View 1: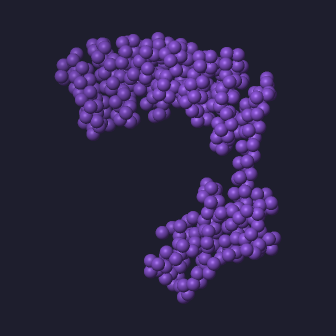
View 2: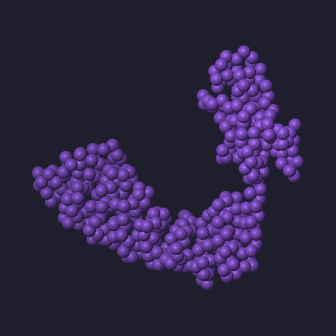
View 3: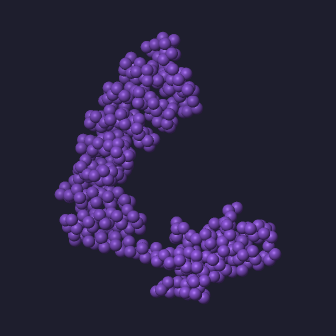
Length: 447
């Protein structure tokens, strides 16, 4: 059972007011914050606030430890004090007694009196503290929602640099406050903001608009509107020419718009889009950009008609060179892209012609996740099967045979084991048994 260290209510000091003043219990009573009867909580507020509701809505804030019941570790609503001086939530301590205990849960002292005395002073202090926090939260919420509405109204009137500044402030509000997102959507903000994207939109305006849109939950009509060729063309332009933040947001927006419906082959196979993604993926200075770029490229490659275009822009060699330096999430995406591209003749040929395909991919057999092993095996099979004499020898020299033996001996998926057996047979075709066994370098693998 969780236990708290006992607290002395007599010397309690805590932040009660929104202004940050520190009050002790006696001062709180003297100044009327804990006035008799628990009536008025805050100037101008006559409505009695529900403590349970306030506690639920303020769940994420840090609560003074003296307000916490030592049994449940939740804020108390009806605190009662035992003869030992320890205070608990009434329902919790009564349940403790009903289980046959006649001790104080915190001190484990034997109780000489099982009377529970309502701690009205502490109850009023808890109520006052939560009331002021709750009202301050509501005030901030109203201010944010009001400001979001004002900014949307301003967007209907302002132009030029004033429009950019209004959009920038709205983006900051939307990013910082989840409540503002709902206001923007409820007030028709998505449709309003989307009208600002078009063939004559400046990149300054476009980048702010896209920065807002990627933080909203777009419905189907909004997505359909944003799929218009003129809007997509602007997004692709900014993907190629914007700041790194803009590039990442453009990538996220395109992926949001794709969903289960693609943008049309003419859009996703656009060489400008694919080239922009490839540049983003190759920029190792920005890991978030690499992840976003790989994610969208992976989604695009699910469309069979686009794969040849991805290969034609020279995507295979850079992806292969990136593999050793990627984190696990990016690595799995990159391997999946290469595996998908290996299903078409042009992709297999590009993989075979890349000098580092085999050595780089072999490294990830049995070294990361089972998914990475499966993808790596599929790529290696496609390449080695394309040119067995040339590629199998390179694979064995890169340590493939030893890795395949580890896969076969492991407890992984039987399908992976079978593929490993087939690939091992393919690699052994050009060797005598003795030479092939020596090439396996099994002792080094075990080490």
